Length: 149
Image (cartoon, rainbow, N blue to C red):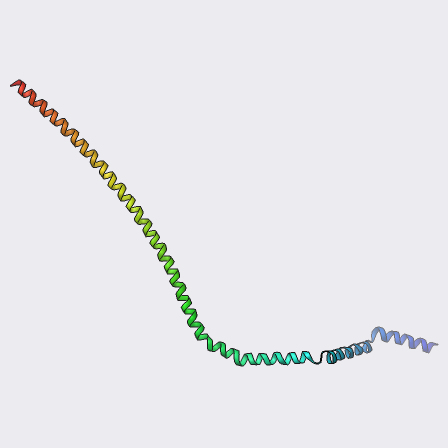
């Protein structure tokens, strides 16, 4: 009985602390699943990805490097066109400002001319009034002088 008890305790101890049988079964099950059901698809996929990487390295990189000068030329052309558009818009803005300034100066000039015409008419009116006053004064003087003679 003690032998069976020791055997049972040993079995319980082995189950609790020794996982070799369980792990061994799990590993075998995993390998079986991996090898049989997937038919080495992962290995084939790895080989395909390595092959694709090698092909990309050998051909695509060289194609990209051979297209770089053409890409640089096209980028320079695009940059030139962008600068032209920018300069054109800046020139258009400058033209608009110049046109606005011209209109403002024309308004100022017209106000100046109108003001000068008004002042000229005032001076002419004043001159005519003074001229009329002087005529009257001298005509009055002549009358007085003729009267006294």
